[in-house]
Length: 416
Image (cartoon, rainbow, N blue to C red; front, top):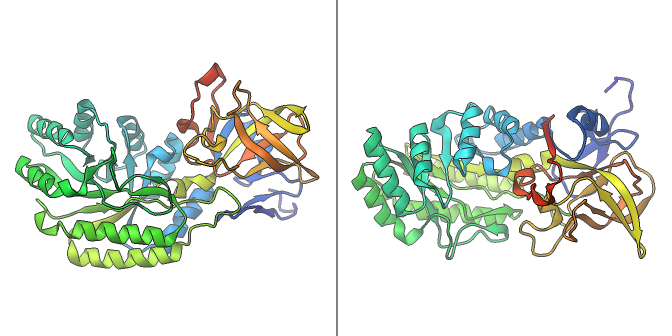
């Protein structure tokens, strides 16, 4: 930006915890540059753009609020773009993966295998052998996995590093997606854990700790605090059964971000205060142990935008449709088809159009009524060629979408 240019304008039409800015022409600023220039530099639309400065600001916010000694991990499944993972790997304490494909991304990013963990309910024997060979921590989710790792350990002469992923007897209240409590395919039911601990000791595996992930996308600090407290109490109840000193207790994450104007950002201070108390307790209860917070969308979600271009403007029986070159095949979550019960619009902006508004629906090029990025949203009047921006798109975007559906081009992706 030229020093003589007017200062950027704050752009916060919804309750984002990290507001964006635009220039006096209404152009969104990304990495300090007008969006249209960034899109041209990347190669056009549709594209995902991730702002590294916004991720850095989020990490700095967490480091300032959370207690020393609490380790911050990134859940790679949230957004496995290699450049993005590499950026975060240099700033965080560990990476958590859900496949050997993600494992390769994590190791290529330069993360020490000692600080990589692997969770997932369907690890094949070959994947378990590969993870053991890489020297990472493997979260056990069944007895079959335990037997496969015992065989791998015997063949290699080195005990596999293992933790138990626990399916707790409670849920994370008010979470967008519940991953624990009740009957689940994830982890080992809590009532089976004591026997599994005995078996791990008998097999001579290198036990290191536990992993609990009761839910995700939570904006209620009191619900997160309750789940963390109950998770810690559950582990403490097994302290006398551990086959080796506890090194790692991964409490999961669950920190959510607001997607609609009526959602309020997570209040971080009370959660941080509670975690400070747990860190102190852990030092006393498990002198060789540490607590891990595994975050995904909270680190990247608000740092990313999906950008698509209007290729047609249509009127149908009184309704305006902005037909774009991107849609649900690139951004399934924004279409409302990735876990939403009642469809709600993500925050959407017409770039460089600060003038009059209208009610319009943003749709993609697919031959299905599901291809809907914004339904009857109040937007600036857009013309063919304008850029439409979908915010809150840095998590569960490109790789969580059916990109092969109907054979349209793949979206571009860039870290800026």
